[in-house]
Amino acid sequence: MSEWCDYKLGDIAEYVSRGISPKYVENNGIPVINQKCIRGGAISLDLIKYQDKEKKHANEKNVHNDDILINSTGVGTAGRVAIFRQTGKVFADSHISILRLNRNIAHPLFVYYNLRKRETEIEGYAEGSTGQIELSREKVKKIDVTLPPLPEQKAIAAVLSSLDDKIDLLHRQNKTLESMAETLFRHWFIEEAHEGWIDTTLDCHSEVMRGLSYKGSGLSDSGFGIPMHNLNSIYEGGGYKEVGIKYYRDTFKERHLVRNGEIIVANTEQGHEFKLIGCPAIVPSFYGEKGLFSQHIYRVILKEKSYLTTEYLYYLLLTPSVREQIISATNGSTVNMLAIDGLQRPKFKLPPKEKVVEFSELVKSWWKKKDVNHLQLRTLEKLRDTLLPKLMSGEVTVIN
Image 1 (cartoon, rainbow, N blue to C red):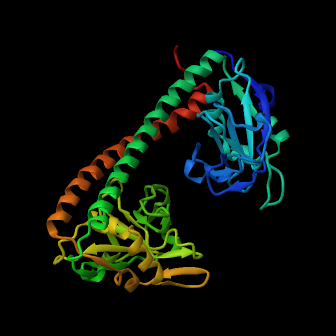
Image 2 (tube, one colour):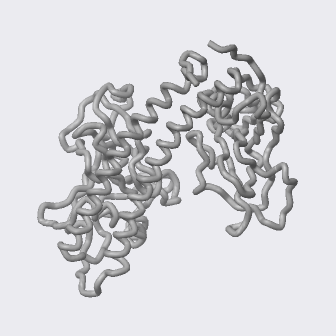
């Protein structure tokens, strides 16, 4: 194996600085990356805020292409890393450290992947009280990093970035397919809804069931027991969140089972922001034919007499009109709750059967493509996560 050398980040950096203290505006400003934007090794553009164009900052405060960004405050968030791979004027806020490398020594992508697998370790460099830890610029400079020769860094980074590019492509394909379905639903059933369509309510077409009130002692490690979908299995705004799955090994009843392809809906939310409560998700197939669902979510199935479909019902639950009716039925002080009848009362215009069937056939094909993409994503992400520590330690080498 080629010789690897130990450095501190300060040894291989041309620039280490905290970001700006911005003056935010609603829009039409300069994008500012904040600490909430950095998650999973990436920058979430949906969470970016905007800086007032009138407030000036030195040009070196701009985030440059290939700069590494490190969250520098907060328990559980300090130490998170991302790499900026864009052009244009963008800032980071003062909760983020900007690391710009000397490219004669270090390849930015290699260092990014090295730091990405060590986020918990990097958080350990932070100082402060339990709730107010901070990773100072001087502490960032002292973070250890071991580097092979530059050509090997480039080769290793190319392997990992190739996997990430494929993963990103599949994510974007799935996002496009989901957007197509949402757009088609809105166009056919909201914008082109006929006045002659009759008024109906959800309880005429669906049944709602409460999940398992489980024992904490029954929870088990991944792969042991039966998968249990729970409140953390649903994204805010709707959609299935894989990282939230739990496994259960205690007793349950047949009524607590949910099948893949069925709809689950969040019935609980901390606070009253209404980002999660009432939001639906489709149970994925990769956990098997059956699983459990907890008391914090509902299972929603269609009645035999209804010609509505799961595909139609899922997007109906996401429409602003139905969301407003569901939200108005919630109650609670600290914890907001949705009763079963609150999910049955909402009114909507019932479209003709042939329109529902045509929509559902199209969406089924898109969902099938999403499922295929997701299986590929799981394979690629597992391969990347397996290779990452081995490549970073030199256990696995890349031949040029």
